[in-house]
Image (tube, rainbow, N blue to C red; front, side, top):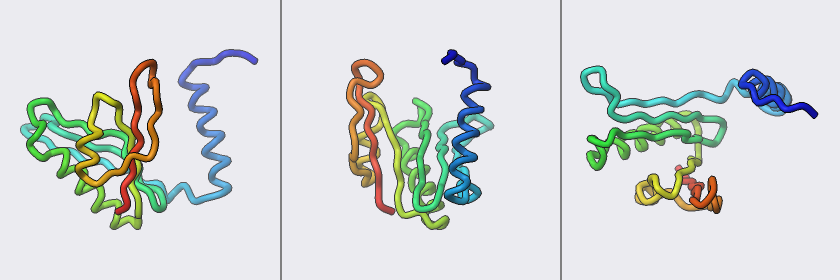
Length: 132
């Protein structure tokens, strides 16, 4: 056993899993989903994730401090859900940390399904999902 913390090694291991998974499902069905709100070339809010089969997996939602409370996050979420439905998705999965946006997501109908305690040391990571 030899340590290798390089990004190249991590990518190699990832590719091996991708190759294995390709034997069991069509990975070409995985599609990126990215949305942004800009003004004068400046990014004000953005969302990124991917759809795959029945699922939208939301990776990131960010809104600039100066734009919070203005509906940008809600608009991005609604549009992402709309796109996911049009791609045949039935569910959304996301995670958020204890100091981030759990109440926001719950107001949009997301249900808590799992709490990762002591993440990374003393916080919590919440996993939520929604039926579309």
